[in-house]
Length: 432
Image 1 (cartoon, helix red, strand yellow):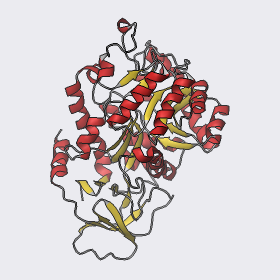
Image 2 (cartoon, rainbow, N blue to C red; image 1 turned 60 degrees about the vertical axis):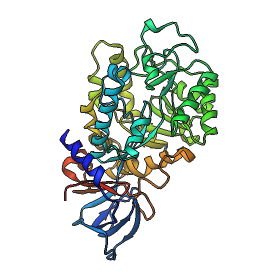
Image 3 (cartoon, rainbow, N blue to C red; image 1 turned 180 degrees about the horizontal axis):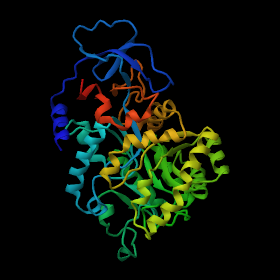
Image 4 (cartoon, one colour; image 1 turned 180 degrees about the vertical axis):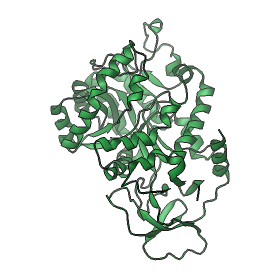
């Protein structure tokens, strides 16, 4: 893609000069209003000074904001960087193609203003390293590594011809490529969990209940036993981080919480009593306002479509429960195997206005999501403060045409409205 090529050139040549944003209105990732006209000095990769008075920085590169909005880079807390630009067959079989396609998509992700993603399933370690080393342009990645699942659990994409499974036997392509890994005992959980951390995982992702996209994983089935879940939590805590668990139903959620899981992904089929429990236990709930196209894109009459039809009505109800009980709520997209849907990443964020004010939604996608990232503790690959504009925070910044606190649809059109995209103090897009 031409845009990607231009960004790659910028990535290779951009200097870490000091940058001074002048005359900007700041959304800081925490509040509900823009600041008075202000100036923001970036030194290296850190926000060094914020002032309503002029800042003396003779050697800094000056950018005239002309009253535009300066906001933190966006954060997607439920992303699959290696599973978007490929088909399932390519992702599980053609490693070379999958990596090249994922690298190109990573650049597009950054160009949509998403400077950080929490990758909750997939072999993203090499992609992360290439981005961190400046080989390609892309967002910061908090990787979980392979989705850890059980036989016939969500994430088990094997064929029936792959059965019976022998513990300690040969891996299937799905497992060899690191997309997901099958475990069927607490000891296997411990082994595979340690392997993810050896590769650089920031957290672990387990699938505690059935899922839509897995053909042999009914929604009502609670897949992991509590001892298996506890084994993962034990290893994650040994490494100073946490477990996130895919779970739709109340039973799956309750078992995960009892085992020590700190973050529930989805939760769209839970009851009100379980929502209260999540709030009482101070558990994170990572929700996604899944667009209708994700459901209708599944073949009518398929097992996957039938499961989607069951899940989708619960999305709005779960958001209402999260608000009612003031649950710590993160935001993400969960796009899979579709670059067309990935292009709607900002529009999916904007769709939160069904339940939240624009300010509440933006706080969720910046400062709040950053708090969830920090749960990785010593496994945090990017020590420093993300998701906010304050002195000392990392310089992931967007200069935006318009006021997203008045009209959140601004973030749905990044090509026209995001005039500058900065990550780690480097400018990757400058349309001023």
